[in-house]
Image 1: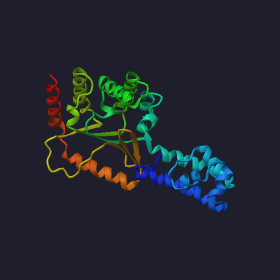
Image 2: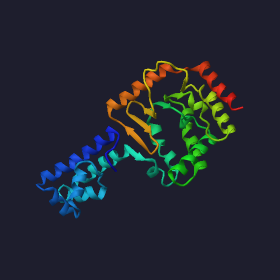
Image 3: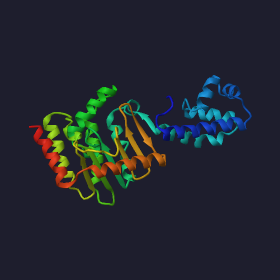
Length: 284
C-alpha cells in the first residue's frame, strides 16, 4: 500500500521502518547485504525502510534473523500490525462478509466510556433499525464486491447497539446533520421506522441526540466526513474506500474541537424532535 493519508498511520509505519533500519545498521549490513541474507531484491529493503511497503511478519522475522536480533522480531511485528490497523480498506475488512465486520467493533465499544459520533448523510450505526441497516449494508456489499450478508450483518449491528441500554457510566453523544433525516435508505416504510426509532432512542438517559439544522448560518467549521471519537484516545473516520483510525493526540484534539463546535450548532429535545417529525411527514 502507498503512503497512508493518515499521519497517525504513517507515523506508526515510519517508527517500524526506523526500527528495522537501525537493526540493519547496527548489524553492519548494507541494503544489498540485508536483501541477500533475506533472499529478496534490494529494492524491497529500501521500500520497507522508507515506509513505502509494509513488511509482513515473515519479512520481519527474516530481517531480524539476518541482523542477529531474532528476539526483537515479535515486538516489531506487533508494532507493524498496529500501524496497518490504522488504515484499512473496507474491501479487505469485509472480504468474509459484513457480519464479522460489525462484530469486530464489540471489544472497542466495551472499552469506551464516552462515544461521540458525527454523521453527515446517514444515521449512525448504533442508532440504526434492522430495515435501514440491512438496506445500507446490502448496498455497501454490492459496491465493495463482497458477500451480501446484509440481513445477518444488520442483526449483528443491532446486537452491538444494546450497549446503549446497559447500566453503567457510558455516555453517547450523537450529532446528525439534518440531511441524514432526509437521505432515504431503503423503502419509505424502512425510513419511517428509522426516524421513529430516533424519537425513542433520543430519550434514553445515556444518549444525547443533536440535529444540526440545514438552515444553520455562519458555521465555524465544515466537516466533510463522518467520524466517531472514542473517549479522547481514538478517532475513526469513514471514507468511501477505507476506514482511517487516528490516535495522534494533535489530530484527535482537532476532531474533538470540531465536534464541540458542531455540538453548539445543534438543536436538542423538542426542537430536534420537530425536525425528525417533519422528515417523517415528508415521506407520506
